[in-house]
Image 1 (cartoon, rainbow, N blue to C red):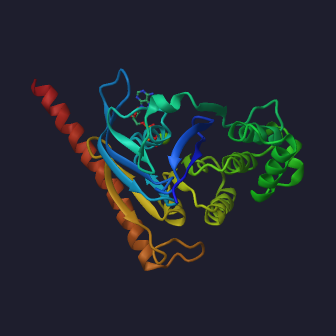
Image 2: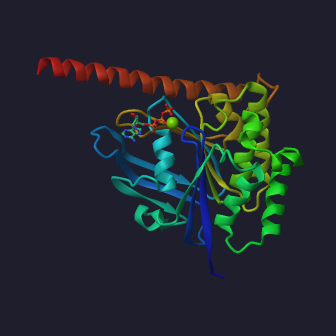
Length: 304
Ligand SMILES: Nc1ncnc2c1ncn2[C@@H]1O[C@H](COP(=O)(O)OP(=O)(O)OP(=O)(O)O)[C@@H](O)[C@H]1O
Ligand SMILES: [Mg+2]
């Protein structure tokens, strides 16, 4: 059976304080609607000579939870922006479910929202606004019910529905952002260091909650989660990519098996320790090779 349905992509960015809904893109649901292929992608920001990516390739199957690691400035956020369609590859292409994902076609359907929640609107209304963009024909009552359900699912009390963002803690606001991302049933979730600003306890609670929501979702969302924290990636990801600086786009990638997964309170698992060491080694090696390359460039410039 073959049919086509509308699907939506949404991103949560703590740095850019935005939730973005890319809407009304038709995909064939039979062909892994939320699988993502990054094929021979090169990228350079307009007006800049610095090449962020030269020939990046990634094949991410539907429903996989991926973490992106790498030194500051290596291009993790840029890669999310490319996947979101906010930037267009200089060369190569990105595919969703085998369908090319071209910027201009999607730009019309992009809706920007403030990630930090509109300050004059209650939490509930903030979530309902996103639902309205996703489901324009949904009745007011249904939207309210959906928002309330998601507020509860992310572990917030019902009274949060009527509260203004300024009355919420950082962790509560982040739960709201996740509620909003899930409430619009997006098949792809792009998260840019979403827990970076939270304290350790709140952070671990939200990591557990995100994993639970991801595991329970049917169909499972394909997640791209940027973090600087190797342990966070070992706890969350099924697959980890280390993004390189310079001309190395992706310096390392690995699957994380159940035996390698970091489990809270069990710090002595040798398989986890091995993988953690390998990831740290790969990141450090990339930093080292970039430093050497810079030194060579400086020497060449002096000689000229
Ligand atoms: N709008 C822009 N115009 C030009 N260059 C940019 C722009 N945004 C980012 N860059 C450059 O692109 C490179 C990659 O930036 P990006 O923000 O993707 O890195 P990152 O890996 O997310 O870093 P961090 O871990 O610090 O968030 C950096 O050298 C940055 O200076
Ligand atoms: Mg970044």
